[in-house]
Image 1: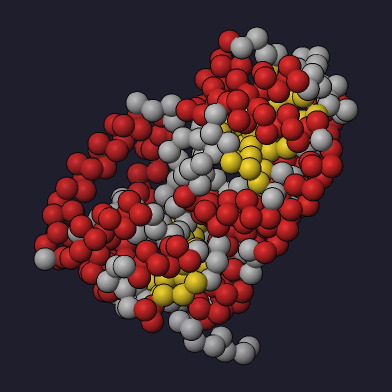
Image 2: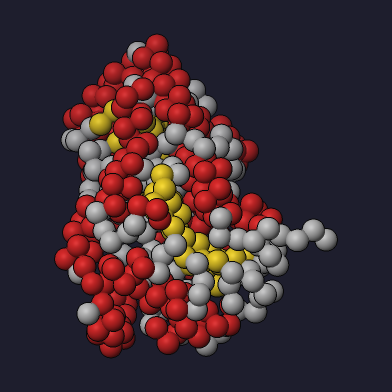
Length: 430
């Protein structure tokens, strides 16, 4: 039955891909399809990788997943029989990030069995490492058919996805029969995987790799410092809302207006999760009468802006370092939250909404230690910010607790590498 359903999925795959592309064209992120014509050769497995024999293949869906596996790559290179590492991603931004880790970084072909089989035949990997939730049926089944061990790292599965696979039990049984090991990022994920047709011997709790890669490195610190001085923000109280989504920005801006009435020196850094949608964020700021400065146009910076709109990736950690208090987005809509522990590297208290399913352990640790606070409305967000800004001792105590929460969850890289080493022969001495 599972093979029959996989066949049906393959027959429908072209129509599914076209529908997905059409929906993407209608979304605010349509600009990311601008390179589609150039990418077709890779997406259709017409451009095939040339690698040393017996390389290790890492698949990370997008920018966030590539960054999550970053600590593993140099360690895997030391274990690879040939020393070669292939990284595939589903997005061009993910591939660009992966090119900083290996010269062999390409886009993953569409999930069609013939395309995946052709790609795997060209790559000839010794091991396939898949990050987080990328359970593409043809990718995993084609790898299994080729005798390539498949290990899921930083693996997570939501209750909704669990229900889907339990409903399509034959597909789940076929899929997970081709998976050699699942390294779950949390105990809840481990328990959900155990409810699927996965033998207990394949399951391991290794922790979240993203907690290990959170570091107190403020990229672009000099540029940010210069901006703050030019904008007159050097002595201001900076509140940063990072990785925000359009659906929650109205709440954040309403909260900031209330915060400004109580703390006149407060200033806002707004960092949309997807910078290509920053034009709509700018319009919301203008409608509220807030003077804004876009990071990309900081050369002609306005005097004393109320808000800095970060319309570029890669600088968010630096913005956290120069802020006093941080809200992490994707938690007031249905996204499920982004990494709430990133501000903790700089000992910053963290505010977040109730939807933290994608960062459950981090949110729980912050709440337990007292370094994080859940907010649901604009008033709750503003009141929490006002309390911390007006009580320096509470701000300092929450910042220290935030850092302690991060430290308590680190160590996943070592645990994950121990599991991956089981599927690789010792590298011969040279």
